[in-house]
Image (cartoon, rainbow, N blue to C red; front, side, top):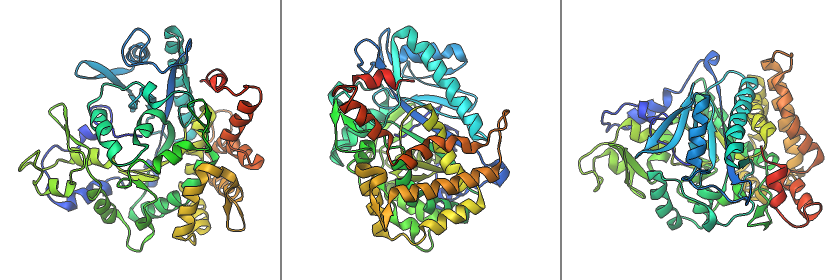
Length: 461
């Protein structure tokens, strides 16, 4: 969700030689083009930790803290990574475990060939986390927004870039600190063959991101009460920072490609530069000036490709382009929905016929319709009116296209099951016309007796 830098996330592998030519930035993105056999699936998910006895989020330090959990996970072969002597991340076999600002635990999965592999990876990770968490009296919950605790109750992890963002966020929107401390997501990162393929996938992904938001909507509570939304996490992004969020209308304009996206990123204000093991606060500064050596904080110094790679992670649109495309519209949730998200997007984007069908579905959406979907789904979910029907009808058609795409991929597990099996939870929600959030609201007003506390017991991993 928030930018990563350092040894775990990859930017450190970028060239450290100075750059001054915009063309190098474009070429950095172009280098993400891959032949179809090399396409992979990278799935990320975040989850809230809580203490089993009082449901409070654990701090970083202490016998039952997040650091203790990370150290416990090293028994499973994870390698630790420290910042100023503090353990803040793990890595193993192309995957990483990192911390969001309030200690939300994130698995950034390895690039894998099938969703079956993704599900095995996620299940193994959750088993490891549960094994260590049980010893420490910690549980973990997948939802889009912290259902019980106030912003002031959330801890902060000892990471330099979060200090910079914590200071800067309130100057750009009312809910940026909530985004940092009280939200969790699941997302999938997917490859493209060339610029034209990237453009087509980017457009389909943006147009249909609200459908994913509706299907995965699971954040109806704030501070123990219903908040009036089904995906409050999605709403939070609408008041975080207008410079770096949103639907990116220019993606649908003629001529869009890598160069246009670079120009967009050059206009996104910076957060930091990671140099000599420290995060230099550059919040609000211009990368264009950096490219000319005109930053007051770094007089005459030019950025490196590592700076550029880091900067790309500080834009937060609904779909984000790096050397792959990130689908970013879904709330966090249980294990089966962590598997369902890559199934949805792989089915739509990794099969040519499915991608053509998805584009046919959305190509005549107007700008106003795309924004109406984005703005209305967080509150109304599948029941949001759209054209002559609702988002539910749109979702059912999208799931049909995704299912046929996965069937044509025909990647089966040892039991002969297709990847399409992972769409079943989403089909259930769409057919019932009821989001995960609405089901939790029914429990809240019924068996839970107006308390959100049971969610930590009934929906923990």
